[in-house]
Structures are given as structure tokens and as C-alpha cells.
Length: 403
Image (cartoon, rainbow, N blue to C red):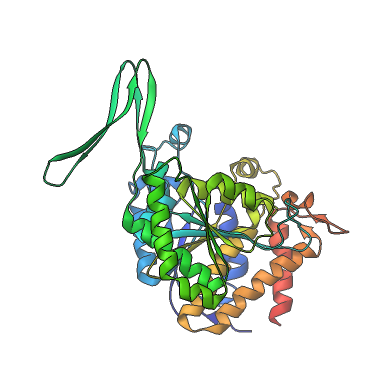
């Protein structure tokens, strides 16, 4: 068969370590042999980000704004050890955080359901989608270390230079630490809008959770905006047969453990970061979790929900065999291709993406899988495949589907 034409360029954001190795293999096996596609390439590997003073991250985000759809490999957010390891200029910010801020996006994560990989939580029968606010909170905090007695204050000075508020954070008697966080009404409104749009399109109910009983201004502001949006969307939700519910975050965690799933769980930035990993693990593996960043104006960036798999990369560097789960990375590509095809009006591109996803699921359900899934699978016969053998097995099934 001839190659399938992808009408509009797809923005490609390369990454680091083992996922970078997998990324190239995905392109060589599943993209270039089947698709006539233009990839607008940006190298977000930590060394090139350092070389460009992180300008490449900004450029990649603006390219997604231009073309509408991007696909991103996992990347390193360097700490002090990574700065030393890679001889970097500084501890660069999370590229995901930078891209989210530029796109004003919300991250939605959802597990990939596979019949012979049962959920660790017995009550979970349907996918739980996580909607994570992608701005502010601890990810844009300002921190100080206090080295002795003194006071830390929170001060608001308006644009004219007039001091409007001054609040005591703490009167320190000795050493300690303090931080300040912020958020923006417009960002919270964009988050709420994206969540309701997503829930309506998927026809799933919304849970939203904060701790407004303790944080009576910061967290309460999130609740107020979501409650207002719920009232505005009441008729649309009723027509779609879905509901909106507010929970305190601790109650939501307790309730989610005995719920069957099938809802969008909207969460603030840090909570979404943590709970998406819990849900991924509960459904089997971080390697079985999709992730998409959605902007209010309909731009999309697909990625795997896990990191760069450093431990496997160290083995790969030594020439040792690895068995790294590539499912989430491949699903990042299929998600981006399906959305690109949907926006372009090219159903053959959408169909190809769906067939590739089916090939992956059928491979695992047929008993062929990477090491991380082996102990989780209930398949009668299981075969452990290494990183590249797994993708080879998927490609064979894909070829059979495309005949």
C-alpha cells in the first residue's frame, strides 16, 4: 500500500535518555514507513535546551500554536545533579511547565484499558480521566530559606505603587523556610472551561476537589470559578446526561478508591501531578497512561505520562538488554495523528492511528509484553519481550491489519 498523506505538519518535540531511544524507533517503525508526513522538529533534549538557553522550548510551543497539534517525548527537568552530569549552565525549568504556560493549557490523563491487565483497585471498572491545572501553585512558587529570627510577610502593592495589603506569614524564632504561590483568575477560568468542554465531549461527569475549608481564599477561588462554570453549563450537562460534583480533596481520594470510575477528576496543579501517577499505577503502569495538553482555543500537545526511564537508559548505555514499555510513547503519536487527521478532515490518518492502537492492545492481550506488565497480566501464556522486540511484535500485527 502507498503511504497515507498527512496534510498539515505535525510538531515533533524530541526528548531525553531511554525515551529518546524509543522515540527514534517509533518513527522508524510506525511513522515514516506508513505516512507521508512533514514533522516540524524541535530538539528538547536537555543539552540542546541548554545550548539555546531554553529558547527551543519556547519555539516549540509557538509552533504548536501555529500548527495546532504537537507530539512530545519525555524530557529531563534538571536538578543540581543533572546540571553536573550534563555540564549545564543552570537548572532549567520544566519544559512541560513552559509549554503549558505558553499554551494556557490543561493536562488530561487517562489510562489505557487492557483486558488482561486488571486494575489494582478492584472497584475500578472504567477509565478515570485526570484533568490537571497546568499553571502556578508550587510549580511557580518563590521560596526563601530563613537563617535566623525575623519575620516573613506577604505584601501586595498595586500598579500605582500603593501598598494595599501586608500579611504576616510567620514570626521566626530560628531558622526555617517559607514560600509564596500564586494563580490567575484567567488561568483558572481557562482550566474550568477546558474541563467542562472535555467532559461534555466525552460525556463523562466531573469531580472537582480542593481544600477550601483550610485555604479560604486561594483554594476557595478555584471552587467559586468551577461552581460558576457549572451553573453556566447546567443545561448542556443535563442534555449530555452528566453531572458536576465538588469534594474536599481528602474526601475525593477516599471516594475514588471505591468508585467504579468513568469520570473526569479535575485537580489543581500539584494534586493532579500526584493523583495522575496514583491512577496510572492503579490501572497497571505509568506506561499505560495517555496524556494530552489542551489549550482553550483548541491546540493539542500529546505526550507520555512518564519520565525518561533513566534506569533503563543506564543499562542501554552499557549495551545491556532493556525491556522498556513504549506503549504510552506510541499512544502519544497515535493521539496526535488522530487529532491531526480529525482537524484536517483526513479519516485515513485517523483510521491508521486507531489501527496502531489496536495492534498494541492486541499484542499485550495476546501475551506478548514488556517486563513491567508481566507480573500484572492475567494472560494464561506470557512472553517477556525486550524494548525492541515488543515494537517488532506490534508492527507485525499492524501490517496484518493494513493488508
